[in-house]
Image (cartoon, rainbow, N blue to C red):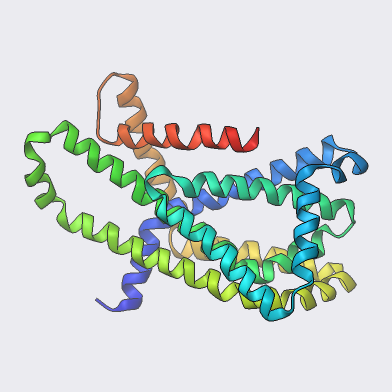
Length: 284
């Protein structure tokens, strides 16, 4: 099989989860931005611990030279990506993505109060087109692998006398999922790696351009949104796949309500146990 075809297939099979992660992240970011913008007066908002921490971090980073910032972004962002990958079975990527989107909402509110939200967001998307995409696809593939790991364990529990036969039967499927994981996670890490020098060397000057011509920031943000839709929702058939997977999950939930256990129920249970409490702790 040709390498590019294999990569494309890995993304098609993961596209529903990638689209779900993108939609979740955007929804949390918008909700966080709206909440903090509507709830806090400027003076009280600027005194929040998260805002002061953000200002201190920005001040420290701006003191570095371009190469120093590049190394800082590599260390920080690749470290976060590694955390999501290492803790795959615990759905750490989903919890981390929700937390990140929540914090971005606070940052958006900061720049909204400074009357520079659209230039800031557009400048972020210059390198974020690589960085955020990297995080999206890493979160998606780790969530997909975690779901299948717990589902496989559910099969072993349900059919424990037929474990060897099941492994033999699903060997090609197991190899396919693991292969997809290596491909998509590697692409994600590579995109994050490429984004760091772009963030350090290019984004600041682009920000100045968007400041001087705000209309360009709106055009660029719209182009980024259309690009995501074209690639993940259309080219990789994400919208079709997400509806297909949603139908499977709905069937599994109906079986659970009827008292009929299927292996996917263990995946769903572990997702709830690991993700929902973590998100509550993060947001509260």
